[in-house]
Image (cartoon, rainbow, N blue to C red; front, top):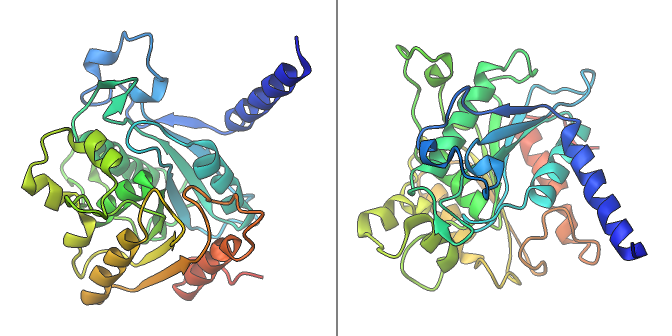
Length: 307
């Protein structure tokens, strides 16, 4: 075996071991709604049939009570679990934040449509409810539970923030009794608008909504058009150098939040290609966004002041 192959294999095994040291919890104890037809599929990623949360908990002496649902991007087709998921979760733990990486069902995978547009949000809402159900066990204050999303995951996070409910008090499933409203949102180079213009990310829109772009769905999934005064406080990060998802997505969302008097903070960096997440060693200014995020959390009482 070539050395390059050994190194690559070692890297894969290391990454797998990192994920396996954390508990992985299914969103539903039985079959996820709508997944019945794919239960016996042998060519699909497991999470496309059985969505899960990977749990990252900080040391007890560091735990702040703040929890964060992390939604990686991937254009509603793929999913960047490592650098937009597990890496961020470990960083959160270092700062006393419990993190939960969502492996959600995407509408399109392996060049076939698996689900309709409602399924990603169904998984994301279920994830928030599940975390609240286990709040005591996972050392999370159910009133300090936010969501962080990247790219198309940012679109899904924003969808959570504009389309939520208080839960169903009479539900037989205790998870469904919990609220699906995040207490705050962190949207990093997010897809926001689904309007048929130059701002929208065409790939995410096509994968989520299909070829037929019904006007009511374009509006429903354009989060900047769905903001109300009850939308959670929001922290936005983007870059004008992003050639994949236009920074105007974040700007539109910020202006909508401002128009409804929702607390919001927007950071637009000059440099930083799409997908920078925590990976920006040659762009020192862009690497400051996590520190700014911690400061914002602190200002709102969701985290200790950054050192």
